[in-house]
Length: 356
Image (cartoon, rainbow, N blue to C red; front, side):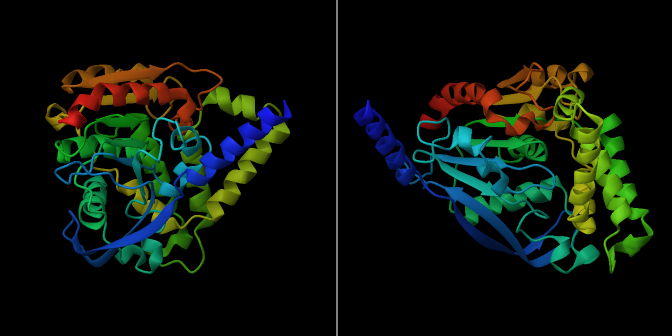
């Protein structure tokens, strides 16, 4: 018994030692022109990678996986136990000993160039097309990756995944947008975003972006709107079943708001204003699994959007995950245990394409 336990511990230790460790880097896109016509002489793009690129006989990379984060997030968040801990380890679906995992920070996020670096509202206004093109330049020109085995993303990253499929249809073998919809943002979704934007702009302390102190009231109101936009009533009640716990959760939101930069938040939400991949869905060539959860208040299934639009994607499938003790509303996108079997199936279905 003792010997068996020792063998098991040594095996776990050996796997931990051989598992690729995250590597951080930054690449600069020079003279980057935004869709607005504004320019930056140097656009810094931060990223984290795990594993190493593997090339075929012709020199093409065949094992690269791009994972795109949500609004206000960063690539680092995917290293947490709920996401990377379910996907990137030895024997897991995106085993980093087999795949080259790329986790970029989008424009305006993480350690990539953003308004709070110093330019404030003089920072160029970016949109999702700019963000996708910047990530493409990072991957293609910076990391010298000419092909993706898979592009996937959560929330905003899911929306970017749709844009990737249309903008660079030959560049990937498979696509997996999570917690997203391939249409213009309208209705309740857009209304919440407008509340967030107006809350910041209408705070007297914002001062057109040149604030000496944070516009705290605007940031708190924005955080409240974002929380209600992305939460699940069932999970909120289960996590905060008493009045004391509910009050404490609201206070935690106020503290989180105080740590945010108003211009960064404002730019991040305004970047979604003209998002609309719907007119070009037929151009997506790679197999695509669109995965949403039934308790996602941002993309409620009763709207019927994905059932309708997925019909126009040549190799598209729509998976709706039922509400359960494992789902977390919009945040289900980061709980890989809920949907990783679908990821395995997508990789299986798209394998012949990668082998060509």
